[in-house]
Image 1 (cartoon, rainbow, N blue to C red):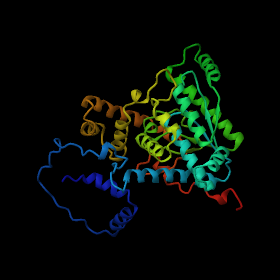
Image 2: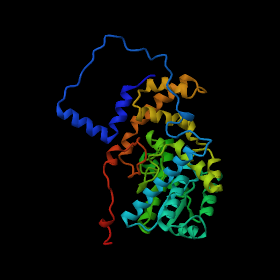
Image 3: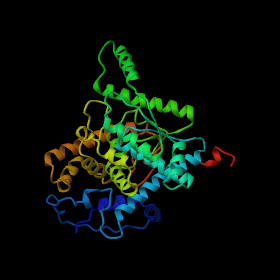
Image 4: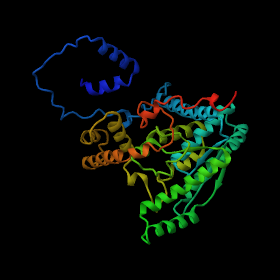
Length: 384
C-alpha cells in the first residue's frame, strides 16, 4: 500500500473539525516527536496512478444492485442545485421569474431543467398539466440564433420547451452582429476584427439582451456555464459569463452530461435526447467543436481534478493520465496536461468577474466567495 501523506494532509485541512483540533494542539505548545530516518525514499517512478472507477474523479461507479449509488448521487445533486436556485429566488424576494439564454446545448439545457425543478419545489407541483402551466409562468427561455447556429440545437431547444410548457422566444442576433462588426472595424481604424473577437461579439450581444430583459421584467437571469469550461476560460467576459446567479458553475462537464442522461432516464424527455445528439460547441463559428478546441471532456475533467484538487504539477499529471486513458498517446496526454495548466492559470482573472455561484462538492473555483455566507436574507427585502 502506498500512502500519499501530502494528499492526506490536504484532505484533512478541508475538514473543519480536524483543522480546529490541529490549531488547538499547536497553541498548546506540546512538543511533536520527530523520527529521523537515513533510509532513501522509495522510488515511485514505476508506479502507475490509481485509476478511479469508470475513469471519473467526480462520479461514483454504476451499480447493478438495488443500491444504485451513481443514480442516487446524481438525483441528490440535481435536487441540491435546484434547491439552491429556488432558495436564492425566494430569499432575495425581488424577482418575478427565471430567465435563460437557451442555446440547445448541454449547459443551457441543464440550467433550464434546474429552473424547472426549482419551480416544482416552489409550487409543490409534480410533472403534469399544472406544473406545465406554472413553468410557463415562471420560466422564460430565449433562443438567439446567428448564422452559425445549427438546426439540431434549434430543434432541441424548441422540443424541450414544448415538453415542459416553457415559453421560448426566438430573436436573431445577426443584424446586431453585423453592426457590431462594422463598429469594431471602425474602432480598429479599418482593420478586420480577429476571429476570437467575432465570436465574443455574438456572446456579448446575447448577454446584453438578457440583461435588458431582466431589467424590464424583474427576472432572475441564470448563467449557464459549467465548471470545466470556466476553469480553462472557455467563456466570454461580458458574454456567456454574465448572469445574476451561476447555477452549474461548480459542476464539471462530464457530470453535466451524466445528469442529463440520468434525467432522461427519469423523465423520458425527448429534448434531452435531441441535445445529447448534437456536437458540443458554442456555435460561434463554422463547424465549431468544443472538444476539438480544448480536449476530450473526460481528459479535461481529469486534469481539473488532478491540478486543482490534488495540486499535481503538469508533469505529474502527464505521468498519471496514461494509466487512466490508455487509448490516447502519452505525448498527446502530456500536451493536454500542459495546455490545461496554461489555460487554467491564464483564466483566473475571469473568475473574479463571474456571477455568484452555487457551491456543491469540495472542489470549488470560488473558495473565497464561498466563505461569504449567507449572501441573502429574506428580511432584507421584505417585511414578512
